[in-house]
Image (cartoon, rainbow, N blue to C red; front, side, top):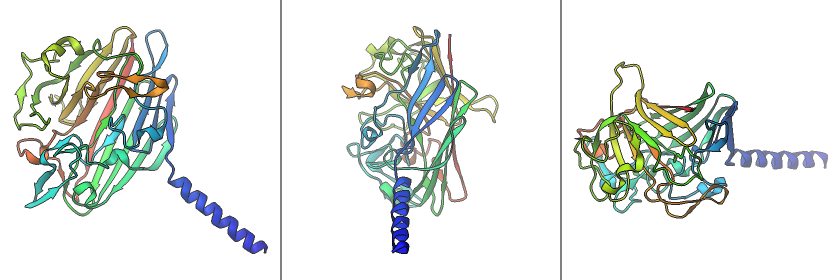
Length: 352
């Protein structure tokens, strides 16, 4: 009887351990007053808490109270999106003479990897240290959302010093060439997630060209200068200062300036919220960044009962160019089995 009882206990405990391994959890990184939270559901950034110029702490990332609220949402709050971020026109592309049809979840186009992209899967926690980093991994299978080949993916969030957050995205094709273009879809509001719109934030963006889009937000294939257009942020100005010249707001890919030193990251942007004094600087190794002013947010119930309206946050999603699989003149996103996709981002936060 004792042996049977022990065996039953072992089975129950084993089942609990297995079940626990499948659970979605929250992981906090913290140094001093600077802290951030993440979950292995979608490798999602849940919050970033920073002091303002008076020392007051605020969460500057839009999101939800519960992790369950992130499941199958339409905002992509804080998620890692892929296998190919942004849009693929016509939900198809040709690679090595083979036509691949991807999931059409945005009209006739593919958006952020399809109906169940990387933002809607449970990632494995590979490593976690509260004062330094958390690493999530995911094994994408051949044919997932229509993409070819098995792909091993990892994302590491790292706290550097007391005011820097680094993000490292890696992907390795295991058996077939495949397009890879990951992006972090965080919505920022430096005044605090519940402080209203981001129109008065001042932005400097280090890109003198954009890739124009059609009515379905698919790139035309052109690369045009921003000079004398409302897309010109080469000199700092308020985000909302030229909204009257745009139909809906900003949702466009910028071609980033190359670093003068080949081993250095490109500087992407500097954003300042003057009332609280918070400043965010961003660097990357990617050729583009999608600047998005949350034009599609509408009465979205978020953290602490906050209702996010249109333009409640801004996104700066470093990336390869949208729909690059269908535009040979854009930098290629095809990665071969012996190659490795590497995407780096570094944020630096200050307050004055």
